[in-house]
Amino acid sequence: MRLVIARCSVDYVGRLKAHLPLATRLLLVKADGSVLVHSDGGSYKPLNWMSPPATLRVTTPDEVDLELGVAEQWTVQSAKTDDRLIINIHEKLSETSHDLGVDPGLIKDGVEADLQRLLADQIETLGTGYSLIRREYFTAIGPVDILARDADGGTVAIELKRRGDIDGVEQLTRYLELLNRDPLLAPVRGIFAAQQIKPQAKVLATDRGIDCVTLDYDAMRGVDDSESRLF
Amino acid sequence: MRLVIARCSVDYVGRLKAHLPLATRLLLVKADGSVLVHSDGGSYKPLNWMSPPATLRVTTPDEVDLELGVAEQWTVQSAKTDDRLIINIHEKLSETSHDLGVDPGLIKDGVEADLQRLLADQIETLGTGYSLIRREYFTAIGPVDILARDADGGTVAIELKRRGDIDGVEQLTRYLELLNRDPLLAPVRGIFAAQQIKPQAKVLATDRGIDCVTLDYDAMRGVDDSESRLF
DNA sequence: AACTTCATCTCGCCT
DNA sequence: AGGCGAGGTGAAGTT
Image (cartoon, rainbow over all chains, first blue to last red; front, side, top):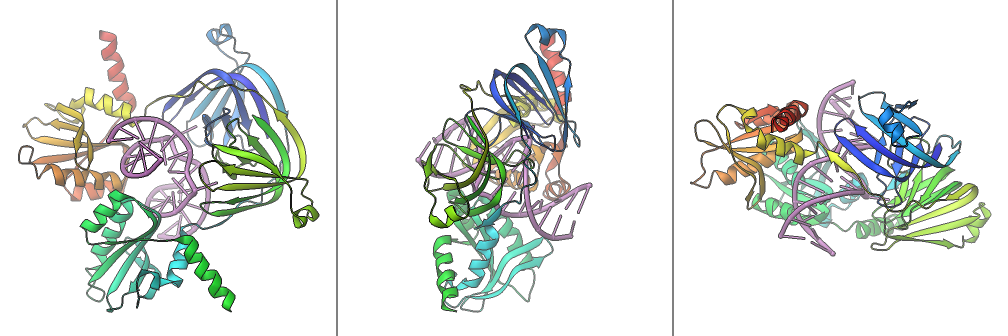
């Protein structure tokens, strides 16, 4: 990994065009040839970047650039697409290089898959008498997150999201349309379950007769923890 | 901006939980208190991070951590949420600090807004005799990208995307449903225009009587350039 | 390899 | 401040 602090201007040409005027920034060159251009603010997204695999070439600036004070020019070319990043370095303020080795990688807990597992285990969260038919019930247009039976024996298709948005409702609608064509399952109700449901999504869901349920992941995990402690 | 190369383990607790085992990484501390943990690979997304505004405190590792070889512990606390990043530094291999100043920011060209402006200017791209009614035609459920009139005087709602996906078709369908309830506008046809249209989206659109048009941004910009040169 | 779906999405615009 | 849509979305898993 190479770290360069430099006064530079940057141009990206590819899926769109983007330009960064002259300023002091961090240039981070990774082992796979990818390059990140970071300022001293903003979030984790760089101002500009090139994704791996890519190759960095030091190219000769044209006369105009030379007159503008470009000391060194980098051309970072994507190996797979024709995306290109051109970095005009006017002044290098610092340069270091470090050998980091391969990273063992990140371990996560609390993503949608965990939520699905918890809800399947605690299907009665949705109402007394609910029972699980199965998780990831496969259909021609994709898997329904959870298929369950309610207290009256009716089939319920559950679409699960961390953040309940309008396209989640659309997705569930398509599933319900399909499932309700199956005489062995029909009629099938829909439940849209999420940690947070956007108002617009709730309106659309309600309009289509789909129930909305807001889930409390911490509470559900708490129940699961106490359950596992009992064993 | 502070750059630290360190052997460290990292834990994130917040919207979910995540853990990084001990390895050598780059720790980037920005002026706004945000922290990025980068390895020497992957893309621009850090392995772990804390978004600004945040504060970094050097805390005392507990006995277990001390015995495991933790020399220094950072607790990065988000100022707005209860997200927290804990970095256990076993060994600092390098540490530098730089003053970068405020960045002038990125200038973009070729995003959906540019595409919309171009298509509105060159509405005849869609067919001879087309005329613009207006861009961003507001409805109760959101703005229709472009409303136009075709050669026969019929109203056309145009949904514009850089990448034409199935949810763009759903969006246009909702608009069409609403617009066709208005007797002053009805009947309203739909056109789904994008630089690239996914096969699935094309099938769904066609099934619903929506025309698909693939746009060539470079060509459209070319037309616009030559037009502006004429003036 | 193409495609779909998730994301600690981020980012910007607007109300 | 919160909702909403776009993104050079990226990244992971599946067909």
